[in-house]
Length: 227
Image (cartoon, rainbow, N blue to C red; front, side, top):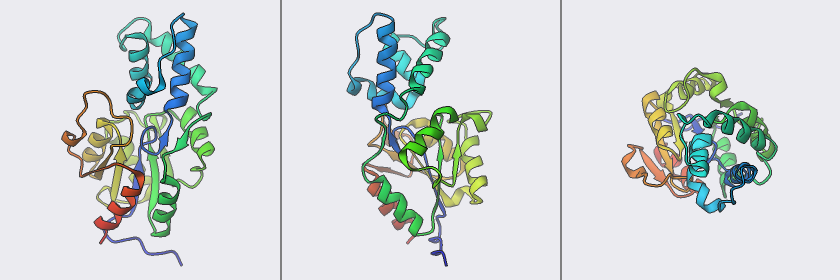
């Protein structure tokens, strides 16, 4: 017989890059390969790390000093994604402690899913390489919704697929858009402060219910909320 779901909470929803998985090295590799193609020197991975949760938009902005309105953006984005596809799981890993945390949550009867702005073309093979798939109960990417985060559509779809009310879920992310999406959907929200917090951001002002410095703290938080 499965353990009973702890009262008050039934599911944990996770952002992918910067929350569940440390993917910065592979994204930095892809960006620096693209920079090399344009005769530019490599940027240090530690310098690029804070931009990872902003996806191609943030990384190309830092690596080529442009925004999405720039005429060069579309071509550079497509080439960046082409390069990234070949290395998206080369050095990526779960953040320290997340394997045991997920096992412990499972043992307490929680469901868990991933809600990411990373398209399925990259997210699915990455989760398989990390050993998370097929254990995750659902994966929601921009391929499944009409509007990505910060719109709550993806979080609400995840709740529906899990068969759990938003109020019985917690959504964890390292970007303001994650917290906005979770709050709009009606879930509890947690900032993954160990993730890729963009320069100038102040996570304590995002309006989240809690902030954690490590995945292990997520387990303790869920247990406290469920007491």
